[in-house]
Image 1 (cartoon, rainbow, N blue to C red):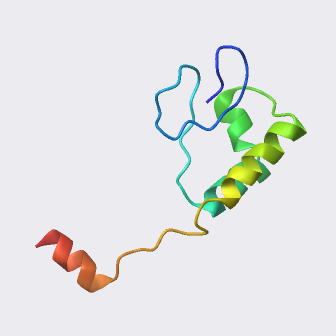
Image 2 (cartoon, rainbow, N blue to C red):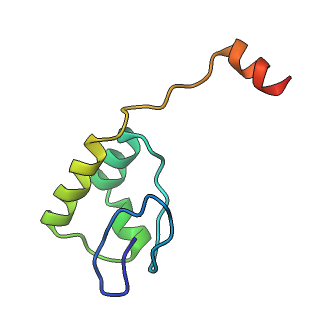
Image 3 (cartoon, helix red, strand yellow):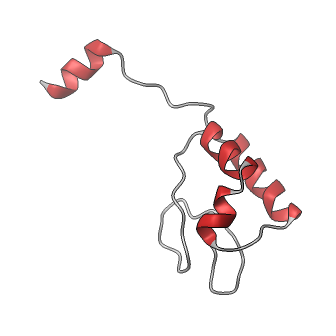
Length: 79
């Protein structure tokens, strides 16, 4: 979220005021968004290097990829 004060922060609960951008909770999504400057576009702001590093550090706490259910798990969920 880009807050009304212009700070960019992670808002895991989606409750903070400001301009938001959704990113999936996978490290690969965050790395791609930071690399291609998609967050800057979505938040309509430039990210300084300190903010980018802080967001990269947050991304490191996320799983690389979320596990996808196998076919038997999907069938159990549907039935």
